[in-house]
Image (cartoon, rainbow, N blue to C red; front, side, top):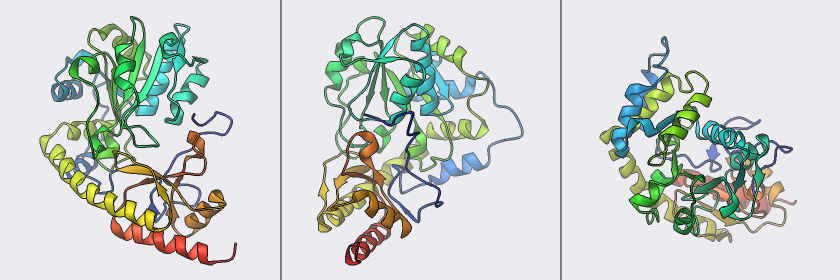
Length: 336
């Protein structure tokens, strides 16, 4: 279940109160920003248009993934691609299958383009999967079976926004299964640069024609110079080395943060990424989250994901974890 159009999009990060001092509500890499990627973005030539065909960028991304450049579809963001591929399916009178809990834009795009949601994935033209999944940070249950069951004409998009931030295990698909799905990559989270909107998709093998139709649906220059710079930095081995080192630190911080939450009497749910869900000991969670926010600590209420009574926490450094403990203890000691 995801956010509805009536309520508007619900996201973590800055809000009407500004930038939270200790922001657990987003899943960005807390070790970031990646210095090399940040330098690339800051030195991007914003005085000129990028190549509208993104030939060099597509070749670099294709080389990184070992695919043909024709299979690379640049996107302004993951959300932009979600709406664009939904538009493609809507133009063919299609339907959509959604995971039980997932990113709200899957459902928003389907509603906006009039796609009928169906409960049986075999009857959908567009299927969404995310691994590791948000908000639960767990592997997508039955992912291999979902992919193996795809028929001709079905489009399955595998959202890999958190694959670079996986702290345990591995994706439960082999190479041939990955070749059957649209892979949606959003490196800005892994690089700690979520303010730079840039993404790309890899079309399934043999799907160059749909990739070309998706490219035709895009506005001119969906990626600006800064987005191009971010994605080009993503292809560098030195940037990938930085990411690998950051995962080691995130594993240590996550272990500590889980213990911190459990010490507060919260029930922590298992997960494999740099974030996790927990059920705080709270009689009025919405009110407690407002009190935390007033003290500079923001958590992500998962009610909009269809999981009331829980919160999602990105893994942050120990000082932020200590601030969470102090703020929670303070609001619990005060009369309600």
